[in-house]
Amino acid sequence: MLSVCMATYNGAATVARQLTSILAQLTAADEVVIVDDRSQDETVAVIKKVAAASPVRVQILVNAHNQGPVKSFARALEQAQGELVFLADQDDYWYANKVAQVVAAFKQQKADLIVHDARVVDGQMQLLAASWNAYNHNRLPQSLVGNLLKNGYTGAMMAISQRLLRAALPFPEQIEMHDQWLFLVAQRYHLTTVVLRQPLMDYVRHGNNVTGMHSRSWGTMAAGRWQMWRLYHQLPQK
Image (cartoon, rainbow, N blue to C red; front, side):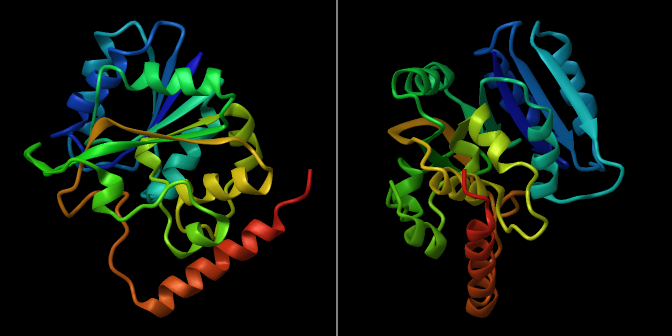
């Protein structure tokens, strides 16, 4: 069984395209868990319409009030039952071979965290760069220190095992990024991380992505990284 977890917010214009690309690769045994962060548009209605045409179970949870992407993803991940759990943003587009390629790595390499590359496109789906990792200067795989300096493990391109998920939950209140936290937990417990070099989706960058990190001062960034370092070392040994 596979799970796909998505957080949405005011994504009515794009979520149908993304959800359709995901559902086409799943079976009736799989699930999609979507947490909507109190959208002010027709996001939930669009999701319901797309879900109604698919045999895949789509669970939709709506936050009582706006929680932000980290807490919304945490809520979705808490519901995930699959042995492999994919993270998905609302405005991207998965290629038809994405799920098969990631599942193959999960099974063949006994991976607990898989991350792949993506093409970078703008809001009109026009190509900006052939590789997100090159575009964003991500050098993968990363060491613990390298990741704390600059997180190169992008959640929208990530899938994790149920074992890693249970070790990472509940998310500490102070974490900055859910994807970085998942990587740090995998490092802490020496779980297998696999990097797939091929682009398996179009990653949309249009300036107002919900999960995008806005420009911050060096002081703010340093404080955030120090907090993540402390939380990493507070994880119990197993």
